[in-house]
Length: 248
Image 1 (cartoon, rainbow, N blue to C red):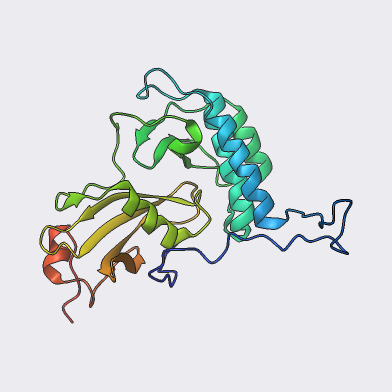
Image 2 (image 1 turned 135 degrees about the vertical axis):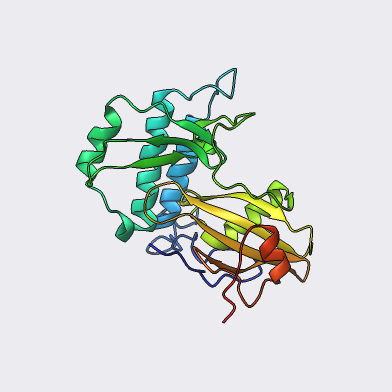
């Protein structure tokens, strides 16, 4: 599946993430205030926050060790619920089969910048072939990765604040859709940043994008799986990170 830009602006915020007004029917109660109710995305956001706090209550003494199966299973379950809440049409597996799949012995997996990756070599077409469990849901962050999601030889790393801003622009309030990794400043022209997006669940392909400095902020200008930024990103910057554009 090809992933294209989502029409984000420079403010870096998603269009969702707000709940309904939640007011009572007459706006009055025993203390003169209405009763507020959480519904839809707002309620899911609250449940997710509580779940993350429970999942990350304590981590291993050595963050490079494989996470416990219980934390991996809980993380996968939360990812599945998040997808149901935000992108139910993207599900391409049988939920009953997946529920049974994650109850069985889990693969060993590997650590990557996007999260702990589990791969099922013999998964059926209706099961999960792989999943990345985010580090935020596991409650640990390795000192060393055993596998990379992308490996750009050029540029220099960007700070986590910039990575968070890019993620907000791409995914809004849906922080458990994909990870933004391998974000790097260009050395050729420091006004440009390249980054890679890795979906946690197998609903779309990895993608990459470009952001440029605009009014003191980083603005994502293009995002996709191929021929990204052509016509906008200077050829020398594209080449720095191993990309080329059609000449005709």
